Amino acid sequence: MFLKKLFFPSLIFATIVIGGTSCKKSFTDIKPVGQQVTSAYFINEGQAEAALTTVYDVLQADSYYGYDINTLTEAVSDNTIAGGDDPAIFSIDAFTTNPTNPTIKRNFQQMFLGVARANFCIDNVTAMDVNKFNFPESKIRILAEARFLRALDYFNLVRLYGPVPLSLKQTTSIKPEDINLPNSTVDGLYTQAIIPDLQYAIANLSVDQAIGRATKGAALGLLAKVYVTRGDYTNAALFAQQVKALNKYILLSNYEDLFQSKNTREGLFEIQFASGNGEGTPYPNLVLPCSKTTFCYKKFHTPTPDVANAYEANDVRKNASIFYEHEFNNNSNPIIPYIYKFRFDNGFDGAANFPVLRYADILLIEAEALNETGYPSATALSDLQAIRTRAGLNNSTINFTVLNTKDKFKDAVLKERRVELAFEGQRWFDLLRTGKALSTMQPFYPNITAKNLLYPLPQSELDRNPNLVQNSGY
Image (cartoon, rainbow, N blue to C red; front, side, top):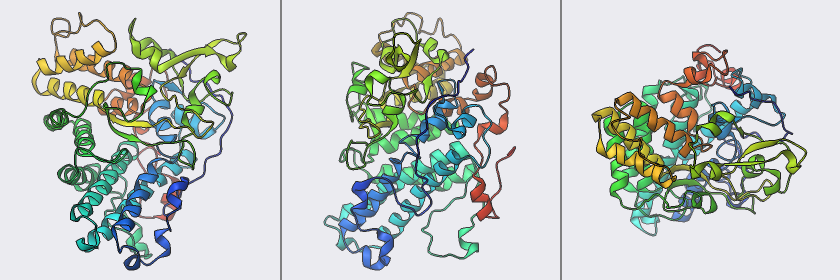
C-alpha cells in the first residue's frame, strides 16, 4: 500500500475563462480576432490560419496539457502522488473534490475555450470563398485541423466530466436561451461531435504536415482510442490497423530516445512546447529532481511505490521514466522517486513536448481490441511482444500457454499500458474504460465511490447556467 503525501510549495497559475486569452506570447502577436467584425477579419488565408493557431494555442496552457491534465489523470490514479501546497490538488488526489475546486474550474473552462475557438474558426472559415485561399485545398485542411482539435477537447471533456453541454456553432448571441445550454448525453457527445469530427479529419488531412499539426495518422489514432474507450473493439482494431497501414510510424529501437528527443517517428501527436517567447511548459521543473532543474523544492506528481514495483526486472522503461535521488539532492535526506520522462527543463519555461498519442499506444489498442474480438489473436500477441522486446524484456511467458484466457491476455495488455505510458496522462482513463478504477483505488482510498469516476461540473458554471445539471453525487 502507498500513501499519498501532502507536500510542496505553491505556484500561481492564471485562470483562463471562456473567451479569454492564452498565456502563450507568440500567438498574441496576431491582432485579436475579437477586436474586428468577423466579415472584415476572414478575408485571406493568413487570417484563417491565425484563427486556427489560436485553437492549437489552447492546448499549451498550464490549465490544460501544460500541467493540469496530469493532475486529473495521473495524480488521481495509482501512478503518482500529488504535491505542492495547493488544497485543490490534494482534494483531487484524495477523492474529496467538490464543485468549487479551482483546478476543476480552470481546466473545464480551458477545454471549453478550445471548443469555442474551434467553433469560431470552423464557422467562419466555412463561410469564406475558396478563392481567398492561396491553394483551394487549404480551406479544407484548416477545417479538418480545427475539427480534430475540437474532437480532442470534447474527448477529454466527456471522459473527465461526463455529459457536458454540446456546442458546435460559434456563439453570436448573449440571450440566456442561446448561451445557457443544457447537458448533452455522453452518447450524443460521441456521435454528434467527436466521431464525426474525426471522420472529417481523416478524410481531409494528409499523412505529412508541419511539425505539431494534426495529421491523418493522428486522427486515425485518436478515433481508435475513442472506439476502444466506447468498447467498440471492432472499430478500435480497424482504425489502429489503418494507422499501421500508413507505414509512417515505428517503435523507436531505444525507449530512452523518446524522451531525449521530440517529434520522433513514434509520435502521432504531441503538444508543442519551446523555451522562450512564452511557449514553454512548467511541467519538467515541477517533477524533475533538484539536480536536473534550476529550482530546488519538493516536487509535484511523485511516482508511487506501486507503479515503481509494476516494472519487471531489467525493464529499461523504469530508468527512463523514474529517477531516484536524495531529496533536495542532499545525501543526508532519504532517496525518493521522481518523474523523469520530461527532460527539457528551463525553469518554468521548459521545452518538453507532451505526448498525446504515440505508436506504442496504437499497438496496445490493437492488441486489446483484437483480443476482445477474436482471442487468441496472433497479431495481438505480436503487438504485445514488440512493446516488451523494445523494453528489453523476455517474452517467454507472454504466450497463449500462460495467457490462456481472454481475460488474462487483457490484464497483460493493461499492465503493459501502465508501464509503457506511465506519466503520459493515460492511466486514469485506462482504469475508467476497463471498469477497474474502483477496485484498483479502493485499497488505497476506501472513500472512493462511483461518483468519483467523473469530476464535478464547476459550481461557477451551474451558477451562471440554470439549465446545467450537476454530476450525480456532488
